[in-house]
Image (tube, rainbow, N blue to C red; front, side, top):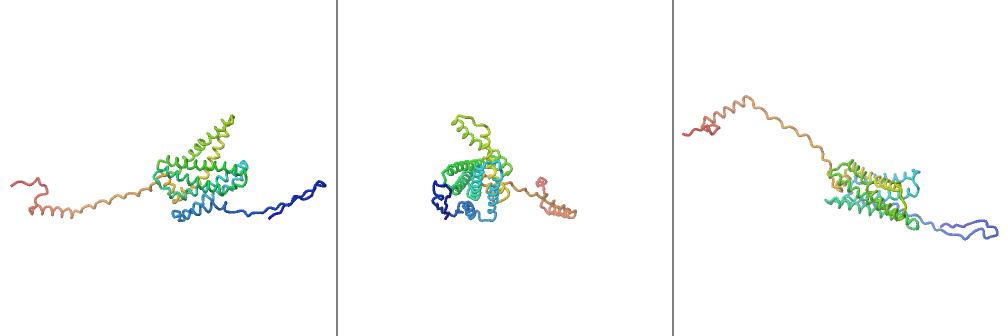
Length: 303
């Protein structure tokens, strides 16, 4: 409990001290900050994830969490944009972790159904975690949180669609570099496809003219956000056989076949010795003389 009293020397205009104001300090709850970590920990307890290799999912999560702490170092970004990027990276990182841990249940033979399940998992976890970690007590903060939530949902959809299209263009072959290359092409294309109608609608509504920088800046920021969050999880899948198999099953990619062992030539047949050849000839002559007839039927003469 804190008691605050305003004090000022007003001379003869009034009292020097105003009425005291009592403020009750509430201990901040650690649940909003700990909820994403607890959610990933609970997913690790699922039966398909009960192995030591599954715990490597913490590597990209911790990497992105550390990257969030380095964002304020950049003086070129405004503080409001930094807060938005931190919230987006935080939510997408844990959403992708949940999608990778639940990918064991996406075993459809149709790539579309697998990608749809990936999208619902990523969208559901990231949005729910974002809603639980926001402060909904202030009016201006609510409007900003809703805007960030919309951007988060759009980013989750862009990531899922880009992953599905990149897997389709890999032609059922597991090629990590080709997959990353197609993602680098798909992400800016999808961002441009989504952001262009929004800016066009604003231009028509205001009757003004939107410069090209106003179009490419959001596209570049959204592309960098999506690819930067997705890349650590892709590197984990390329390096870890446990998550590599889940990526292969998710996108229906055939693993690279192991090299075939060299085929040894059969050993040559042993040559007959001269003594063995003479014995065979003698046995054939004895059989002919005993009345068995010659080996060639055409040599028989009728009696």
